Image (cartoon, rainbow, N blue to C red; front, side, top):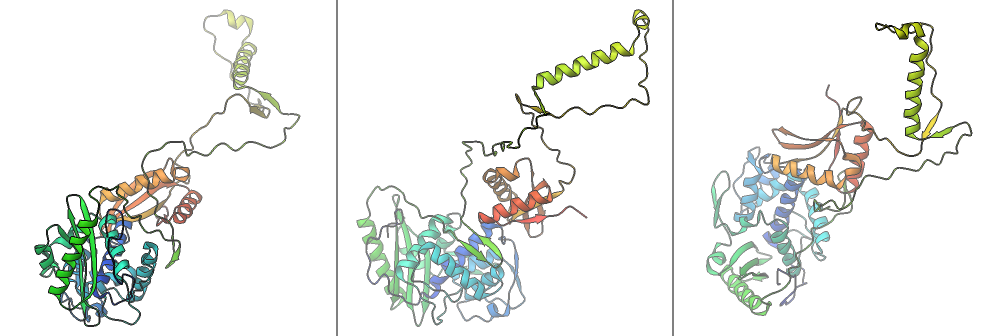
Length: 432
């Protein structure tokens, strides 16, 4: 496949459902990157290793049940060493169980267009119904390259620190032997044979080649090198980039609303403030319609008249005239109902007086990412978040992105609107 456009340059049995083995871990890692980006978990989160992960067969990192380790090291071990115990620990840390994580894997696969793939676990060991195709795994590899380029360098590391030990890359022979190779993932089980999704870049051209069922690691690498050579020979020298679109999810999962991923350009081209609703109430015949200038003029005349009546001519002639005190029995008359028709006066509502509520829109691994998310969400939802205070709150688990200075009703409305767009959101009540 030409990674720049998604065009298939050569295929054979591309849609045959086979055992993917550890190619599965590409989806496990994709969801881990997605969860970090959304603030569901951070790279620094300390993950407690469950017994089910510690008991996975090799290849493994050697984790013990109850051990605590940062998520970043589990990701490295899964990507570089293809550790089964690390992959299972990631799944449980993000979704609570491997079964729930597998459902998320399938949902993401469907959203990507991987129509002939079904996942049953996070590591890829042989299990009934756990199947994929060369075409689907190539699609997944392309999403890995373009959707999360900041993490893609993991797959080209010859070795890496996995927290408790240094681990070597299972794909290092191809990385060392093929010019331009920079990933992606190997896989092997007895049922699957030797599998590989490889990518290489030369002179601005990028090709992805996928092979299932090799008889040995050496034979697999040789065949994949041939496929990559074929790809570079057939791919056009120059072509317009057509990168894949991020998967979009519709529906709900585990009680949270899932919607489209909204990308905000940051460029505001029109005002998003709603127009004033027209007043359709029938006019009362007793209501006098006047302009604002008439109101100001009437007030000035009334004040002048009051002063003239309160001071006698004799007092007015003196130079030291003290104003008379207002009679105690004087009652100020209410002004008649007036509707201004020439000019509307808009006053910003004070942020005090019940505006002690807020909303939390996610937890992020750094203050920068939290502030970036707040800005994007504020631009996308100006109708309900205009005038609120953007605030980043640090805690041991990461950085919470919040909007403060809202009424309870306003916070509830904002959350419902954001959840409908697929943004994680919950209300934050006043302190105490």
